[in-house]
Length: 312
Ligand SMILES: [Fe+2]
Image 1 (cartoon, rainbow, N blue to C red):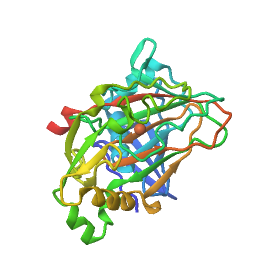
Image 2: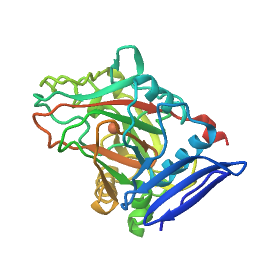
Image 3: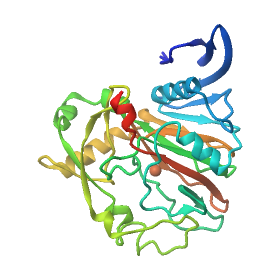
Image 4: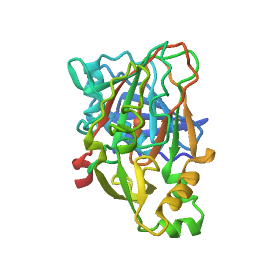
């Protein structure tokens, strides 16, 4: 059953798995959000809104509700400029800090996720992760906008970490209750990390490596989502380099095997001009290949840690 959280002043109609949210002010319908859940453990497609235009408060609230409910939301058929992508992002929080990407010219908060048609390097970010969890105040979400999308391949996989925790066997859950995870970017972005000196094949994507990646940061492995109050697993092996408990490495591997199971996954298929936004606090994601010989280009913004939603 789909439960939709609706802002005050909105009406909801649901049929055949589709949810239509009407904005009504003074009895007059002013806008309709057409939300189609993926039917999987997360994911929904939203139509009926023009993201090239500034969004009113009610529309932003309705999109935020859909985001919190479905965790990964996609807006197809939106022809956006970089400025419009930036404006959309700022409806949901401040820009996050992207320490290991170079930005696109003139847009310090946009990075290009880019793979050239003739590229032979390992697919970028093809391991499960949540973005930038090694930061003290990690981002709340990520926006990714499809510009050049291959005809086949290049899907993004997501796993719902609220669902994974809720279904976790009691004995495993008991062993991770209260456990703190140690995060670091070293495996990816240190000079000797995966994108460092050893990454010798040319890449279209402009990735930076730095000594700062050796730093560590601690976060609880189970966290409370700051907006929904739901319990969720947070991040996974990769950015998590250890768990602060006996046999932490073995336990981390066991948690990884559970939290990435097929039953918690949603496979997202891209289209050109599709904007996708996910909740970095309660999903993991990873890139996939399968498009050798084709270019793929997306523009990315990061929704930073939002003090305002934590204070309310
Ligand atoms: Fe990512």
